Structures are given as structure tokens and as C-alpha cells.
Image 1 (cartoon, helix red, strand yellow):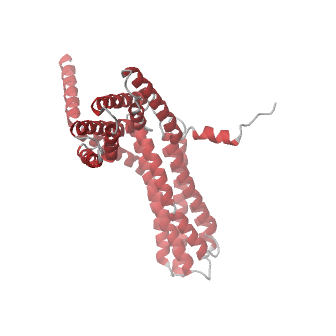
Image 2 (cartoon, helix red, strand yellow):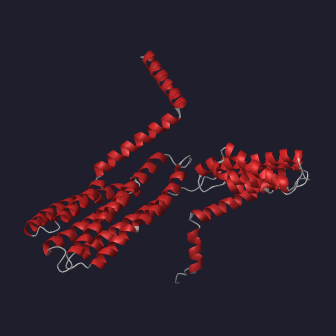
Image 3 (tube, helix red, strand yellow):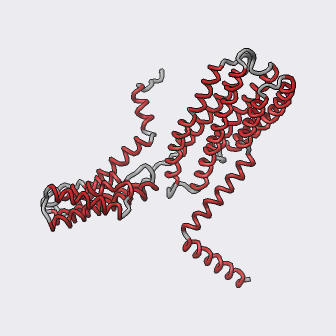
Length: 412
């Protein structure tokens, strides 16, 4: 019996359910409905529809648990402060154009004082919603209770049903960036032989410049992944994952900058040699091989930093080490040929040196030993910053270790 394939719209819909936007929509809807049902059960019968509870739950539930515990608390503060301001004004003045303006002005001012950051407008919005109803004094405290119910449901929702970890999507973004850079290096190698038109060289330069936009998108995906790892009970080594991905993206970003400079060097050579080949045939052949090895190294590096060591991380590291070794051997051979070429034809000798320097920078950034050293330094730095932010916890930990060592020595 032939397999029945799902229609394309259904496939796309299923694929979208794994995206952050789809997950956020489903989680926010469920939390809002639960908050409304809880508020209806807790509040007395004459109370109007408790819409503030689902509103607060909708605002509190975020894509990651860290964002829920940070931005969610600020949002709750904004709503509560707005309700209290409206309650105070309702007992002193009625609702008119000038009292509404004074309420908004006061709400925005106090919102900045209580440091709710980007949620200052929500203070004024909450105040206006409560000020516009009848029996404000009684309604205000009900709104406060609704707000607390919605906030509690939102926080418990993310604590009991931990948000997804977006490391896989961030890894896919980093891997895609490495593949684009690898394809660009291969294309440079294929085009470097023969007469290299300035138009083609300039096109590669513009393509290298567009990598900056790709890096911005990858950085946004990585920031979401970093937040999903923080305070997540399903993740044991969140700091290590964050540091591995962040330092890896930093390395690829440096390589992208060097790649842009390299394409600029080739463009300048093409402008100076419009009537002749860009390089002699033997140099062009070795450069094509060198760019191919560098392409393998960049792609291998992206695979290594996005692959858990428990799976095939060691294989990716071996692939990277092999690509780097082949690149260095070929680079030395290219350097010897370029030196002979410069001695015979010294024109644009400085561009030959710049080309080799840019190749060296890329290989140096991808070096495995340097990568290990960078990881260790970054882990030490972040651990030191964490201890400095919590000096009391560090002091208690130090005393506990001292007491334990004392008991051990006493027992001996």
C-alpha cells in the first residue's frame, strides 16, 4: 500500500509548532484560560469578569523561564502600581479630562521610580482601566487580587511545565552560518584561476559584507537559547552550553570579518590585473586547494561547537584538526610560490602578504588549542562574576568548606 503524504499546508503547520512563536502562542493561551478559571473560582460571585487575571498571565508567561522570572515580575509590579494609583485618585477626585491626565502623568512618573523599565506604559494602562469603572475603591482591590492570581498562574505554569530549550535552533543557526562561510570560501577558490573580472570580485565582497546581517540573526537566536538555559530545571550544565555557543559564535564572527577583508584584497588584485591572470597557474591551483581546506575547517568548527560531546563531538573535533593541518601545509606551499612570484614580478607584493596574513588569522582563530584556552578563560571569568554578585553566598560557602575540613581533620 503506497504511503500517504500529508498536504503541504499541514506539513508547514506542524513545522511551525516547533518554532518559538508557536510555542509562545500555545503556552500563553493555556495560562490565560487557567488564570481566568481560577479567578472565577476564588473571587466572590458579584465580582465582574476577572479579565485582569488572564491579562496578567498573558504578560507574565514568556518563551523562557528566565524571562518569566525577570520581565514577569516587573510586569506584575507595573499592574499593581497602576491599580493602586487609580484607587488613590478615585477616592480624591472624580473622572474628568484633567484627572485622567493627572493620573496618566503620575502613573508614568511613578512607573520610572519603581523601576519597571520597559513596562512603564503598563502602569498608566492599568490605572486607566481601573479608573474607568464604577465603585473603583472596591474594584481596585479586586483587580489587585486578579493580578496576583494571574501572576501566580503564569509563574507556576512555567515552573511545572518548563519552557523548551532553544539550543537546537541556535545550533542550527550557527551551523547555517558556518555552511554559508564555507560555500563562500569554496566559491573563491573556484573563481581564483585565470582572469578574474572585477565585477565578480566585487560581488564576492558584497556577499561577505552581507554576512553581518546573518550574524545579527544568529546572535538573536543564540540570546534566546541562552535565556532558555538559565534557571531551567531540565538543564544541568547551562553555563557550559552558553559559553560554548557564545564563544563559538564570537570566533565565527571574527572569521567573517577576516573573510570580508580577504575578499577586499582579492578585489584590489583584480582591479590591478585586469589584463592578466590573477595568479600563475601553480599558485591558483594551490590557493584553490587551500580555500577548500579552510572551508572544511570553518564548517568543522561550526559542527564541533554545536554537537554534544556525548554524540559525535570528538569526530567533529578530529575533522577540524585534520582540516587545519591540511590548510597549514597548503598555506606554506602557497607562501613559497608567492615569494618566487613576487621576486620575479614585484607588483602588488603587499597584497600577496595581506592575503597570507588573512589566511593565518582565520586558521589561528579556528585553532583547537586556542579554542580550549578561550573556553577555560571565559568559564573562569563568568564564575568570578557570579561570586562577586553574591558575596554573602560565597562567604557562607567558604565557611561551610572550612567547617567540613575542620571536622575531617578532627576525625583524623
